[in-house]
Amino acid sequence: MTSPAQLEEHFLVLAPTGRDATLTCRLLEKAGLAATMCADIVELCQRFEQHGAAALLIADEVFVNAGLSQLRDTLSRQSAWSDVPMLIFTGTSVIGARPNTLKQLTELGNVTLLDRPLRPVAMLSAARTALRARRRQYDARAELLEQRRAVRQRDQFLAMLGHELRNPLSAMAMAIHLEDRCSDPARYRDIMLRQLSHLTRLVDDLLDVSRVTSGKIVLRREDLDLIALTRRCVSVLPSNVVDGITIEHVAATDSAVWIYADGVRIDQVVTNLINNAIKYTTTGGTIEIRVSVEEGQAIVQVSDTGVGIAPDMIDRIFDLFTQVEGSLDRSKGGMGIGLTLVRSLVELHGGSVEAQSPGLGGGSTFTVRLPRTTTVPLPRPMSNQMLVEASARPADEVLIIEDNEDSRELLAAILRQRGYQVFTAEDGLSGLEEALSRRPRVLLVDIGLPGIDGYGVARRVRANLGDSVYMVAVTGYGQPEDRLRATDAGFDTQLTKPIDIVALERLLASNERRAAH
Image 1 (spheres, rainbow, N blue to C red):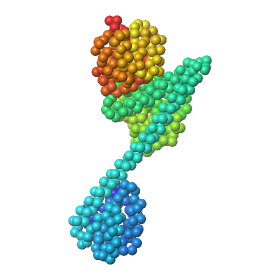
Image 2 (cartoon, rainbow, N blue to C red):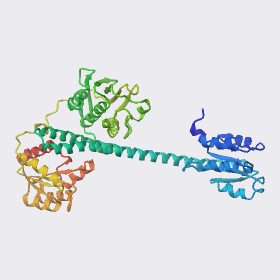
Image 3 (cartoon, rainbow, N blue to C red):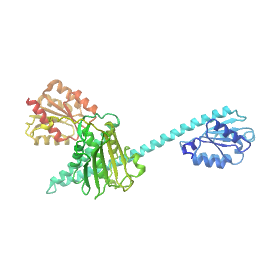
């Protein structure tokens, strides 16, 4: 069966008198060029409109009657990208009898006139030139279609992004409105914290996709027990998220399944797959997380009894911004980046992931395969962070340099509640003056400051105060090169906004212990 692409590269030949059409088709086919002989102008126009053509080879006697008008009408309906080449075999029959015909033919568009008698080598050269020109048009069409697809995909993503951001923002706004008007404000604070966590995850996923696709993810590998990791992922699921859905964790082996991987990233993979299963599983459904070993590989399978995946979606389900269509209401949606991130992170670890589903309504199974290590790691000593003491003496003074008033005052209030002496500055110049005059133990510096940016502040403080001050960059820039730039400027470490207060407390407590020694 001839494919659409093959039909598009056919030459349509129309020479109604003599043996010109037969000889032309035979010559083209001998040269490896497919050709179809048409009986009249109606058949040629129909074939072209239905299947396209590499070029039209037409003898000029076709235009004696209504042929020219019919061809002009057909060509006028071409797509914007198309300008089909036409090779017109000319002689005295039309051109000599009707002087205006030459002008009308050339006005048709992409026309090359070939005078008869025509040498075979000249005709083949013209045919090949026409084919190359037509292929460039096909390439332009493919590029145009890809651009249109990308624009549709972008617009769809922006619409989804707006939806996903507005939902938690709306919940937070209402919780703030109600917090001071009810007897149980803790309930609304919990809502705000939950929605803030959701927003942070959305932003992190977006940034992680960007980092992975640009090759900027650096894996911090360690020995991990995959059974313990997946069990932990299940244990921390919020109860309201899994309400009405049965979550089962199954280990096909009694011993640990060790892998050498980045724990944060594998946790991200498993959590994304579980959240994806929850998203597409209705109340009363079941999700199973199974860990096993197969042919030297560590296997994680996340299966659900949810809406399933249509056969035509299986190959596309890991593509960026792709979602199962028409299965759930939009409130269960997402931005279509979670599975893309899963595949990218798994492949970074030398593994693979695949999706299986019997179809819509039949549930789905996602299988991750990772290289397994057979060496049982030695127990590691507890890290300093694990030994953080709640009674650690707070720093005498903390200076916050932040131009956003709300962020500055809220962070200051949190630290004051924990016993720190806190001072603030709203720009780089005043912050630098405060730092040099007060000589605080800790400096929390935003990067995007007016006057002097955070890097400039850090360099000058370090040059004047040396190692007596512990400097933390607090910024919305979280790429690896941003962290490297912060280190080069003199910062001891960096926290990415929104600030994890627990992580900040650990940093401050750890700094106090270092200062005490």
